[in-house]
Amino acid sequence: MQSQLVYHGDYLLSLDKSKDLDSIGYYLSEHLRIAGGYWTLNALACVRRLYDIPQEKKGNLIEWLKGCQNADGGFGGNTNHDSHITNTHYGILLSFLLDTEVNYDAAANYIAQRQKPDGSFEGDKWGEVDTRFSYCALSSLTLLNKRHLIDIQKAAAFVKECRNYDGSFGGIPDAESHGAYVFCCVGTLFLCEEMTFNIDELAMWIHERQTNKGGLNGRPEKLADVCYSWWMYSALCIIKRENWINQKSLENYIIQCQDFDGGIADRPGNQVDVFHTFFGLAALSLINGEAYNLEPIDPVFALPRSILLKKEHVNKYLV
Image (cartoon, rainbow, N blue to C red):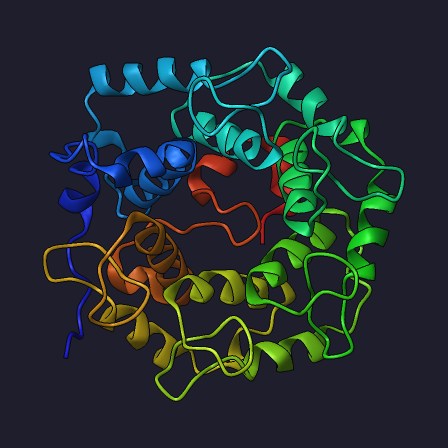
């Protein structure tokens, strides 16, 4: 049984050295490149290796990132992909991690145009609505100091409509409560400065998501998954109810999901991936980051706190 944090820096730095570029899996994940870039660079920042990226590689990443921004101002998941609000959010986050700028005015306008009359946000021109998109909008526009472009009160009102009888949140009104939507909805309401819901009911719902193995599941009767360590523990940090779960048990569960060669999986013994590696490290940074020498990841913006502290207009929203 593992009891220490494995060194993950080399695993993360080697992710672009795939020897399987002709595989079907590589092409099936092509639309996730901008998300993958965010997970990788943020995880490197968390283990304090972000600045180990060679300058030439960083320059190539910046050039690629700017190529993902389309004429409508939004970002696609890769170059030559259609714009979407989630990828636009990732693009903005990546620009902060790479310490560069993209066309922020165009990106902000693209996001603002996604708001619908009821306050919700559509993901793209095809009209799907989801509270994930509400979070992407509020986070992005707060980071860019462009909150005035949207109706914040209506944005908050829509998210409140997605709160369920069990005290938790779903993706749209009357949808099932889900752990990932807890992060999105709590983050959105916090940024809207509308935390007027029963916080203890939500904290109890999250408390009930902790399994006997220490990990958190996203819904009742489901298996624990490392990613919910972030989605829900970050929400507990925002509402200041961290001690409503067994933090040490959650910490130990994440440690057990590591591979000795680097990387974190969803569950012990499973294949590691960059998604769970980042969210596992991010959760550890909040639970007991000093013990592992991790850079703190802010629970609202999911970016290194050291980067956010340089943005004066953001400081009031740091937890």
